[in-house]
Length: 363
Ligand SMILES: Cc1ncc(COP(=O)(O)O)c(C=O)c1O
Image (cartoon, rainbow, N blue to C red; front, side, top):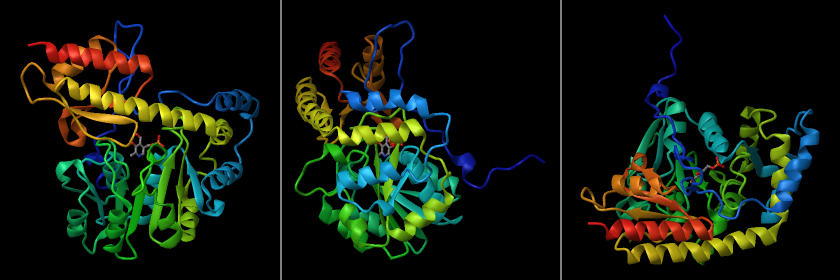
């Protein structure tokens, strides 16, 4: 007899991140992982370098300064913030704390892949709800709710579709859940969205005992390699997560660098403005090549390729990769004919569009 993983574990397909290099090419443009186009704030880099002097000592386990700085930045109660090793860790912790074997976890068909993984890791049953038109359908989500539903994960905006659910729809979804079902609003891309009908989830967390919002430093703050995220939780949820999380789950460099990144609002603003400008430019110019591109509110766009033939997704991926432009195939998200393109620096965006134009002009 050998040790046996819990039910569900061996059903997990390991997460595969975006490629970052191409054999034989010295210079590549990695537009495959929704990282920031402008990189981190110089103040964050300086704080990271200075933190080298502190890595012989355990981090402050409560990440107090970081939580207080997040709270000041976003107008929150610091005692309800739980920091993690990326927001992925918060998504995992929520599943570990609230799921029993056989419980059901709902998410939409093309949602972030980690939701399925965390459900299976807790021996729960992942349920992907159809998403016509690549938008979360609240009626279908509510129709899939059963007495066993314990967590609903909602990425808002969603990766990889780039679409978002307006706040009245999020509230309608919440209104259809029982009070012992947790609604987790994953707002990893929230800083990129400025729409009148969009809310991050802060208000709902403040109002309801069964709503959690997760956020990350990996996107607009450009600290993906450092691994820092956080959840804003009802007090009882924060208490439960704090019992389970690793006592030193956010490293010294991560805490200090994230604090500095939060304080550089001018850099965040510049990253937002760059993203607005180039996401729209990419969308319009890729559409001019004849390809379908969905409207996106995040820092990436989803490009649809014709199934088969000379302009298939596989041909496009090979064509772009050979030129050092790395996009993300998203077949694992149920989108086998799409590539996801992260908004990059100007040079990368221009190269991506000219390569796609050349590719589409081929017969
Ligand atoms: C919707 C969504 N949630 C969460 C994450 C994970 O972020 P983190 O780097 O904080 O773990 C990502 C990263 O791609 C994402 O797209």
